[in-house]
Length: 266
Image 1 (cartoon, rainbow, N blue to C red):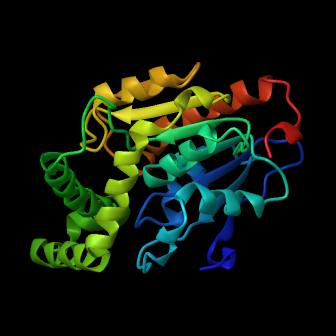
Image 2: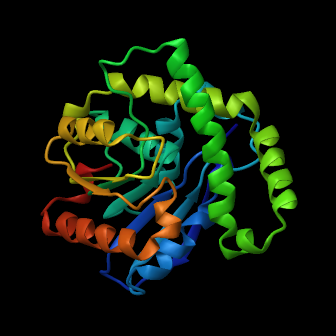
Image 3: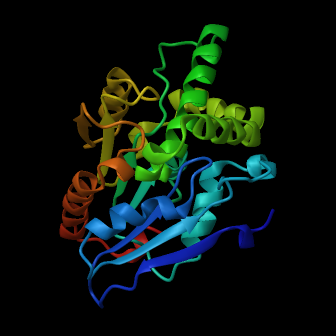
């Protein structure tokens, strides 16, 4: 795969001098999943969503390179560094990889929405593998329902189940192994290297990130702001777009209040 596999979608042109925010989607998710959140942000802002190689229906050949490198390629396609990168799930971990790299900065700030994090004291075991596989299956099913929105409620249950089964078959073992490898490796990230304002957003109804793991992740990132909402699930950026947008706006205010030059970030 080449960099042309990454595309940039402008969600809002914005006005000169207004904040610039870039979105990075999760595994088997799409840039379009950011539309509900974009609609809740200031219309004067410039908003861009990256279409990354781990989009739905991909063949996973991109796995030969770290996800952070692919995200870095996407950010390099932009004409300027964003005020904030807002990233979800697998995309949040790709962002975290860049944040931890001393020679790369994705922007002035980062919002990690429902990232994946393994507590360092928890070894990688077969039990963890099986539990993660079950969670991944539920994640794919919930993701389909979240993207369907109200249409899911009006879809005949048997048809909906068939759609979910088809989605799982399409993703296959490669999708799960990709996520599990990223989750397992997250415990070894040098979180102390992160030097940007960072928001870690977690939900009490998210089975992929325990509250203990979210707290440990935020504690490891210097100055990170941890926000836990007990009614948020893994797809809170879709189901609770207004609330997430308010927290993104606060992060952008913090980032823009910090006087730094663009050259410090890229």
